[in-house]
Length: 375
Image (cartoon, helix red, strand yellow):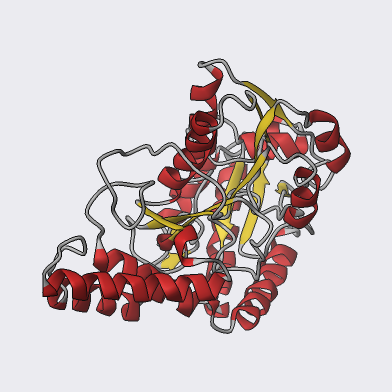
């Protein structure tokens, strides 16, 4: 098996899984209980939270544990707009977001909020001048992902944050699901940040919303304090400790891992450029972990299943997207129906080997020749 769908999810690190099992067995008390077992569990969660705060250079009380990035995005977007609805009802976002950003924004549109989509430049990055034109005193939220999940385009987050700082009634949310654990990134100037453990070799079902201390939210889940007043429910100690462990391991030697993935990406991209009907959609602004291509005239699911029959696993769009539609992100970048209707995503990891890339190229060549001859 050759797995090249790391942007959809990753295999759980053995050390992380061991931590989860150990915590499940040894810390059985409810962290909210007052007895000794509860206190021990709470202390373990506090220790994990402290580690995350140190790793990301944030305060401990700025960490909200969620079930994953989808919940974090919903809590950030709905929570801000509900809490501060008297400040304004204008939202700015892009055509490069995950469906868990579009979902709550569409919900808010149905409830009286107006939404603008900031223009992109030729490389797919936010047009900063257009952002300045769109933002106004009625703008309550700007939500822009750090890294697009399909093409891998990295946004100039720091420059965006500086623009938003000029509007004290406006908050900046960034979905960093495809960034945290893959690239060095500073979140100090961002109001709200979403990420999920399973994107960096953690366990599915646990994520984080970083909410700066000065900000309040209306919760999605009411019912009393947990680790925070913003998300009720019995804290899942094993998952919380495991995401702390996964994050620490992901950030170790992060520059070395990045450079290794970059070398694989360059090699693979050079090989794929040799095919006449292949269009490389990822560009110089994309992180190397994501390589999006289109095979003109070939349906994405057809190539996916052809490679799957060879034991190779890639994806078409983001795993949460409507696979029957064209890629919104690729269309936003290319403005081309053919390219956006035939795109596939190859996602790499520091665990990917050169041998796996060679094997992929071998079988890609076979599948390409078979499918393009069928046209």
